[in-house]
Length: 132
Image (cartoon, rainbow, N blue to C red; front, side, top):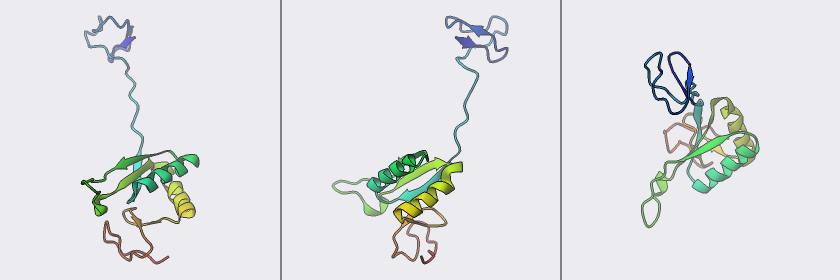
């Protein structure tokens, strides 16, 4: 079924123009808005990112991974191995607290990059890290 975007009349799929408006028909006039996504964190270990994604989804927090790693053969370049974990804006605060409780993951409060306990400065943005 095709629809006229101007008058909303419906036509069979064999039609391409609205006979009243002389406007090209479309399959649907509804267009869903893209969800409001935010970067939850950046993880320096791809395997750990998949584990975090699985954990969050098991807790009812939908999320997606974006691999932004740079791989150079024969081995990946250590400082360029990064995976971003994305979630809905409304789930971000809950997701961060779940990760901190469950995984003891320390995240930079400015950029959200995963940092190790020994770091005093975030290796990604240079922010001074708070002591735990």
